[in-house]
Length: 178
Image (cartoon, rainbow, N blue to C red; front, side, top):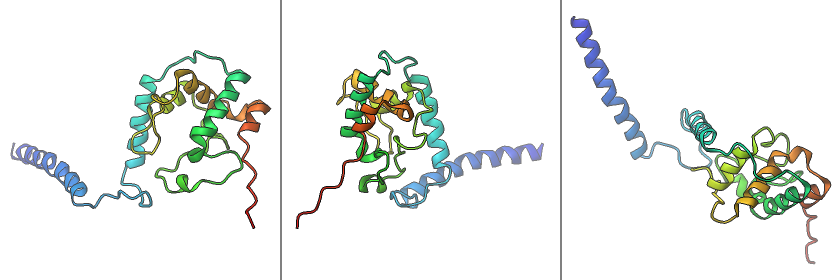
């Protein structure tokens, strides 16, 4: 019986000391907060699990518009105006803004980007943003149709019509004045 009492006392002490240690880690300034600092233990894993579970629960399951050429071209215009500064264009290096962010924003127009994500997942992220990542929510700035257009664009980034690709081509650098 004495062993059981020792176990219970240890469990109670642990239940008090562990949260206290975590609290002190944060309030004493030990937790990394700079975008250049390495992630905290379990930070990436816990953040991704929470985000994925929340988005999966709330995202729309079906797009109310088609991924046709007109909507993809409209989505390309929206992407170029609002998204490319962080997420870039195909064949373009990361912007100074993207380089300074943590976590780094994914390149959506190169490689697989988010083409394996359902459009509803991208819709949720564009509309609501993602806390502590620099990804703003555009739900108050863009219409629902515009959010769907850009969401369909990134979902189909690997198979865009030429008209949409042309809008997303990096601009030729302007000649410097002599």
